[in-house]
Length: 258
Image (tube, rainbow, N blue to C red; front, side):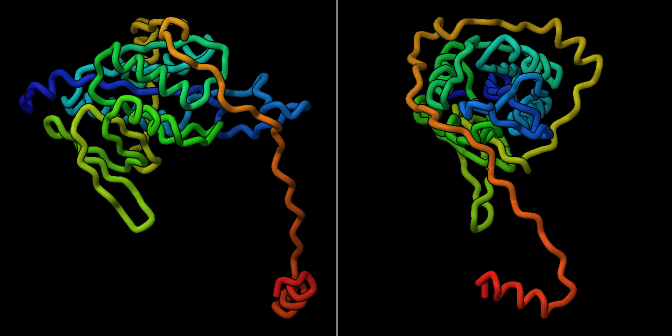
């Protein structure tokens, strides 16, 4: 059994980050309705993953962890996202290179292989990616590893070999006590990510970034889902301005709403 000091000095954290269309961009559907068009579109780190990186860096600044590894799975351009995470305070990065659009289960399998290879004690990742909004990878990873999990974290406190996670639920706040190793997914209220300073951006260029092909992990990443069609949401009808409450009531009657 590790004592408190030993736990503080040996904890390694793995943070998963994803390159997605920037949240300020209004996405367009491809003409063939096969997917979203990302050609010449600004890409950035998934906002929930930024929060995960920030939380890992804060744990290191408190002396609770000694090493932060960030990992991204995707094409070569994912290295830009990894360099951003390194500039925010991560120590090293792993790029699992693939041109395929992996589903959450395949991503979880990749992360499981890396967790076992890197011997980490805590995995932190965003609760969901804003492109697919699946909210599945963290839960699947915990199941594959047979580790305890806490999702939608709004506060994280580590003590010795345990971590207390406060999460928002419909009825209020729920606090879970997990025995490490564990998996945590982050929610928006957990923290406010810092900006990368210019000196840290320059330092990030010298930090190790290891690229490995997804085939090296020896896992099945074949798709299990088929996208039938992608469509843009229906445009809302323009509103009208009424002069009085009486007109509003009359309009609602005509529309059969009252």
